[in-house]
Image (tube, rainbow, N blue to C red; front, top):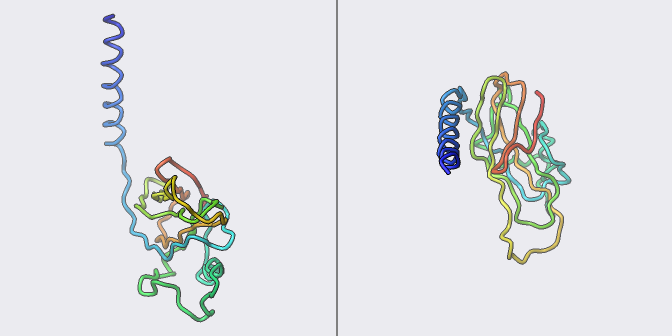
Amino acid sequence: MIRSAVRYLVSPLATLAAALLLGGCSSAQLVETVTVFSDGNCANTKAGITERSLPELRTLRRSRLLPPPDDAPLEPQDELPDLENTRIYVFSKGQQPTPGYGLALEQTSLDDATLTVRFNWQSPPADAVLAQVLTHPCIAIGIPVTGAEVLVAADQKGEFARLEL
């Protein structure tokens, strides 16, 4: 009886101590990023991370019924990053069975040689009545050049994509 009581007491204490030690050792710094656009249907985007140019981003937006003309600026045009010092990456979790899915940027951090972009994965309510149409939600993020070697995408459930830079 005493042995099981000690086990239940030591386990939470060990977990707390490990969290404090590991949390205190983190040297991650926040990185300012720009959401270039977020869309619920990015023309056949595959799951993962891809680097794209501004003209390539236009092809993702062609999934609309009335696409913008080739000379129309991407929105929000006043927030487009300085492309000399910024790379644009498209993040996607691939094909989804209905509308209502998407990624919302939470934060970006740099820890050693790993750049981690954290998202909030949004999905429709379980009782929602939605059209059964395949969608390809994605988000395009402008990230400053940091010298990182690995780009990681994570959501509430953990890492979902990785790209060697």
